[in-house]
Image 1 (tube, rainbow, N blue to C red):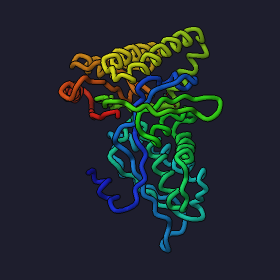
Image 2: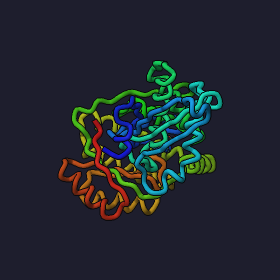
Image 3: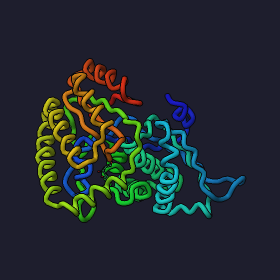
Image 4: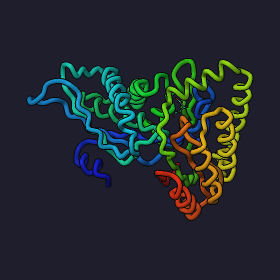
Length: 322
Ligand code: MEV
């Protein structure tokens, strides 16, 4: 266990999962379906309401493991996200103080949905401290409010994965987003790696929007290609055809390159994973830094890909989607 998870042991822990977008980042903003997989690692939160010693205010002790620089870069957004969750749940720290301690084994890195995992874990812990038993839907809604502090206008895919876990189809609509769980008959073996670059989701999403508005036909062409990938990916997941999933990951990465959200660092990791025997690889999440994932045929190949990426990436993790 990490230092953080030891610290929180014995207290009531409230979790939010990390996620990797399998297919559909950026396109998902424009209401087409995406596939997302929650990773096994999570952020956990413990809250302590103020006692006699201090009556009001907010203290956040952030013990999450993180890549260097991540927490400093996101500190303001993290506080804003936390305050939005508190506001949504009706906890006024000017009247009743709160100490929030974050821990868990999810390494905070751009692309893993660390902000959503954070907001969902806070929502669960605060609701419990209020003595409320909220539905998963209500927790998800509170997590979404917090995400706005980080992202401006997020699609909701990250908080949904952070709340429910597993593999999900997610689609934004004019009303509430739709999501459905996907049960996999066998686990998908994944390696994910960080470029070490922390990207700003709101900035990259705004840039894609500007490009779309300038060249709508070009964007619609990419969107149509993406939909073919998505439909084929749904079929491949039904039969756990990982070779097909890998080939589709390669295609989706090429589309994201055209969308200008990849970068040389991501391309290098994607190429290295393929070179080490991965069935396919793509960037995951915002892009222009952040993460990539690769899918592997078996545990031996998963280790070989992790070893190859470990030589050139600052951080590498293995996980399974189940
Ligand atoms: C970020 O994890 C995924 C994006 O599609 C933005 C969003 O869906 O909110 C880039």
